[in-house]
Length: 138
Image 1 (cartoon, one colour):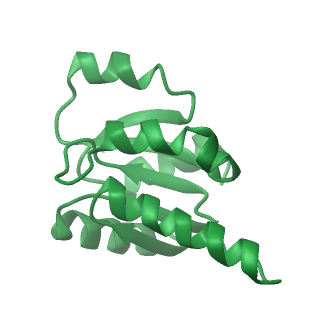
Image 2 (cartoon, one colour):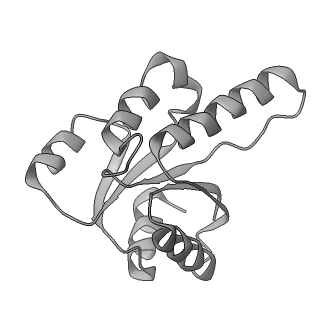
Image 3 (tube, one colour):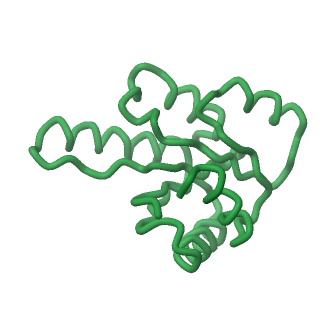
């Protein structure tokens, strides 16, 4: 079981479904959410600040479920920032792209990011999590 997962999606229903399915399948102890890439980066900036200024280290998400099409900051822009040297300390988190469309261009683009370990269709399901448990040895 993972300690913490971050779900980044602009749809509150998708976020609620992620939390429920992940909890039911005992895939992670904690699920945190962000409604766009900017909010997610803000979370990582807060972690950096907390970890630099306190003896106790805050938990880092081990896995990120990422939507691509979001207002404010979409998934691709988030990935460009997240894979930059500014966020190196968090790059051990694997990313699963969860998208409502499987565009061949998006699939090809995803292969350019070594941090992306899979590209799956929404919605998240228990069989999908069982598949991921085997893939990432949870």
